[in-house]
Image (tube, rainbow, N blue to C red; front, side, top):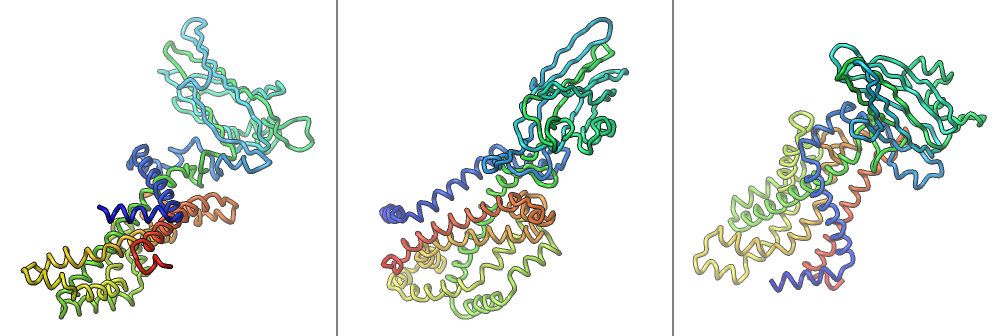
Length: 447
């Protein structure tokens, strides 16, 4: 206990260790928050759901905070619905089975560019007679546009940019320019102010009803933006954290512990056991590590558990096993080992109670320092298209961006966000591992 307290006090003396611990705690906090708020099944459903799940999001939208660093303010996406009270809905019954349903929504527009799209999703309930709707658009200077009139089914979608009649009526190629332009400007310029959407509906049955959802696709969206499939990048960025930490930690622990055990067993028993372990190590050292992982992912399975197992298996018999063997050869000749032999301690007891514990000071810094390398390995495989096809991870985000040519199209956020998280992970563990190495390695304390 005193040794642990002393080591902890020494760690606190290194600013790099404090920074590393701070970064790691943030990542662990994100991982815990993600697993609690977004269950695994829900995350997979959303990630693989496509446009039917993310219909409220625009494509290729950078994060909303881009406006903080840009003089030209881009419109931010939003969605409102009359079903949950976000749009004002008034129902009147003038007589008979006829009822009027008026849905209105007003919003302020203070941006310097035009939106991507406006969409209305209608849901109605009726027996035989379909409800009828009339859509109007009122600009801040009180100009009124009659957008469309049509009957609606139980589920109807109306996209402003796909209405040929509206395009001819506005005499523009893009209806967004016609609906949002300032008529006093010589070039298309958004008119700032309060816009109003008015939906006048009529139902022809006693219990008939309708609701509308207004989706405004701007140029920006959310905290992390969207990809080519409208998916909110917050989801893979959050879920990539527990996946990366779990893969890195399990691979690091599995590799170092098993390497140490094999080195201790070979050193203690010697003879053909030690020779076999050394020959396996020498063969493994010349095997192309990444190439084998690529072949496994290509011809067998891309499951993250399979990749993890193969990674640990290939990482056991590396140069570290020879380093541990050299240390164990020295420890094997120690006096307390001879004493343990004298009172009849078993081989297993000597290996696990006397040999291996002497390596723990070297194990801890190595464990922490090796985690980023395995995190980067998982991300690298995903970038090459060999990541788990089910899990949303940081590497998968970069792979999707690369396939879609994000950098060539100027969608830098799509690549930079996961890359920054990968660099933060590597920096946090590297700084903590460096401090731990100085604490547990007596030779480095004097440097």
